[in-house]
Amino acid sequence: MTGKTILTGVKPTGAPHIGNYIGAIRPALQLAATHKKSYLFIADYHALNAVHDPQALRQDSYQVAACWLSLGLDPERTVFYRQSDVPEIFELTTLLSAVTPKGLMDRSHAYKAVVDKNTSEGRDADADVNMGLYTYPILMAADILMAQTDIVPVGKDQVQHIEFARDMAGYFNNTFKPVFKLPEYQLEKGGALLPGIDGRKMSKSYNNHIPVFMDTPARKKLVMKIVTDSKLPAEPKNPDDNIIFQIYAHMASVDEVASMREAFEKGGLGYGDAKQALFQVLEREFERPTQLYNEYMANPARIDELLEKGAEQARIIARNTLSMARMAAGLKPLL
Ligand code: TRP
Image (cartoon, rainbow, N blue to C red; front, side, top):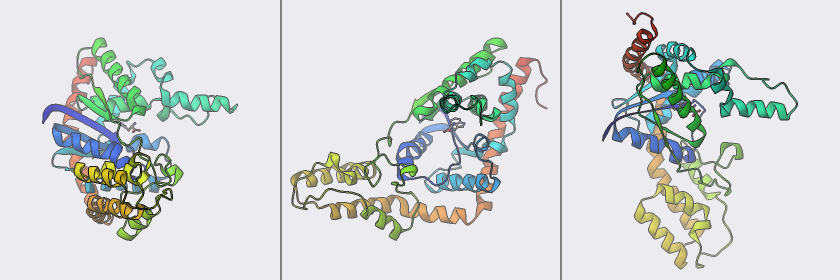
C-alpha cells in the first residue's frame, strides 16, 4: 500500500471486451487496491465533444459505471464519480486556461491528427474541430490537478496529455505560487497484443472481440469460433502462435498456463479441449460480473446514488484545491 494518490478517467464508450479488461481495467483495479487514495471517474464532459446524442451519452455513462462496479471497483475505497457532477473541475479549467499558451494546444496530438486528416483530404484544417476538442487537454489537466494526483495510469495515447497537465501545473505554480502537485504517468502495456478470435488485434472495429459481459451460451459459442489451423490433437503445437493459448495466458493461473503450454508442446491437446479450458476460465472470471452488470443496468438509480456519493467526496478535495488556486491568482477563496 503506497501513500500516493492515483487517478484515472474513463470515457464512456460502451461495453468493454476482454482486451480492454486485460489492458486497462484490471491493471487500474489493481492499482486502486494498492494505493491509499484512488480516484476513478467517468469523463462524460470529455465524451460530449464527440457524442451529441443525449440518450447515448446517458446510456454509455451507466454502462461504464456498471462495468467498473461489477468487475470489482470498491466505491468504499475508490472515489468513483461522474466528472459532470464536480463543477469545481470546470472552474479550474478556466483558471488553467489563463496561464496556458495557445501554442501548447496547437501541439496536441489529438487535435493535430484531425487537422492532418482534414488537410490531406483537402478540407478546411479546422473542419469538425470544436473548442472542446481543442482545449481537451486543459479539462483533462483540471481533472488531474484538482485531486493533487501523484500518478495517472494511462495507455500510450494519453502520455502527452499527462505531460501537458504537468506543464500547466508548472505554469500556474510559477506564475502565482505552488498550488498543484506535478503528476506523473504510469504506462499500461498489457493487452495491446491480445489477439481477437480471427488472430488480428482484438478490436470492436474488426468485430473479432470477446465481450466481457455475455451470457454463458453466447460466450461458449464465441470461444468455439476462434480460428485455428488443422493440426490433429496428437500433433505437437507451438503455443505461441496459437490464439487460444495467447488469450488463456492472460486469464488463467500460472500453473494452468504452464500445463497448457506443456500439453500443446508435447502433443495430445486438441484445439477443441483447449477452447473448452479457455471457456472455463472466462466463465470463472466473468460469469458473476456479468450477473452483477445486468443487475446494475436494471437499476440505474443505484448507480446514480453511488456516483453522487463519490462526487460529494471528490468535491471536498476539488473545493480545497480550487480555493487555493483562486487565492493564489488574487481571487476570493471559495465560501
Ligand atoms: N482522455 C482520456 C481517454 O481518452 C480520458 C480522461 C479524461 C482521463 N480525463 C482524464 C484519463 C484524466 C486520465 C486522467 O482515455
